[in-house]
Image (cartoon, rainbow, N blue to C red; front, side, top):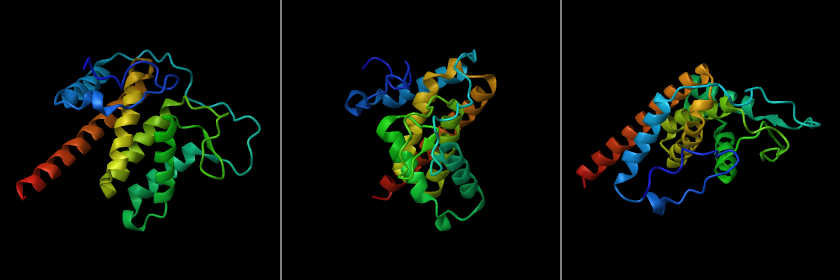
Length: 196
């Protein structure tokens, strides 16, 4: 395998196909960690388009702001008991929508699908989504959340050099969060195999 193929290029336009057979050998974690190190040490130029989404064309009254859904879910996970969280379906819907197209559109229609005429390039949205996934994984330990977190950070790492300084600082924290989640999972798996 030549390098870690998922955190490079232009994944918002050339959406990656995750073929894990290509990374099934032991070098996967080494290459993944190297991709994160490269993103951490990159210098940011702030050259990507502005983080503010333009208004969606003719927004419908029943559209939801994806940013608001992410923020509301993050706040609820930070302040309440996760077992009482009524927003797990909203979180699962965001994960499903991201997994389907590797994009987060500015607005969701009444069925929870991304409004394709709305913007999907706002890196701040993906950074907030990474925080949401981290919190969701820490609460429930569902691999679905960790898998989506790895993918959203792949996307963000591909744009590390295009980020503003503030975005890059947030990316740094999200990468550290991701590494902590992976290390926790590794320790839990090691502990389980020791008892078998």
